[in-house]
Image (cartoon, rainbow, N blue to C red; front, side, top):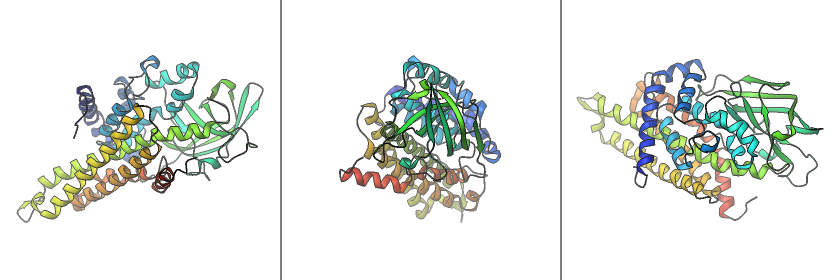
Length: 383
């Protein structure tokens, strides 16, 4: 399974899995049922360098590679996706600051996130704008040395617990071309005019906070602009390349956790005087589940490694995200089937894996969007 990984990466895997089993597993059901953000567990994760693990050491992070980070995500999600997302997404949006931010911005925003003192978020989607990022209508107008932001953002991870958000805004409504005139601006949650409304009743990842954000004449200083003004759309596409690899890692983790749980249950459960693992129908399910998981893992690791090499991975990232998310839902479904009635209640973790898996096919671009991107890249029809 781990052919090609270094001893250090093997150690990372073992330590993260041990943390997840000791600190996450005992509380997974509680946080899921209560839809409660696990602040205490996130703080413990920060002590291990798991909040923004890719943040460079110069800014307080662990300085892990993207492949290292993928391993971390996989192991956390193999135990409980909801709490795992709360941990790994505590630095969501920081990728843009790392890539395009100033030194001042990196010091102000990355360091407290890496230390677990603050939580970040990325505010892109809107009530009427999901996959079509180019239709974002939230505006940021310049007034002296400040930006004045108005609009709504929807389905925002960490919405009510985040300390700041990287917000995609329309800064030049007269810009020519569909993909021009957008900027990314950091908005702190304590700014006047900012509010967040928690979204409850989600199918899965209930421990992760999701909200609608409202910006009503929110003023932020000019220096909160990330990168070049009006050039954020292409910055966003680069951001998605990396975050889609992260979602692929989430899918691999869910598939791993579900397939491991199914294997254990199949060996323990007896019917007709023998373990159900002795039945060929169950054996074939287990074989398919583990094969698909391994294939998804290899595709995701390849994409992660190529990010570390500085290569363009738009097509590969979408391939990994689409395939790994499909494997996650397929494997979780089979895991419930192997558990039978026991898998339909929350006595076993496969019930949560089943519910949690679906989101991997939706956020960071739906399955359909990923297939569009793959085809577009194959046909040489990029932006």
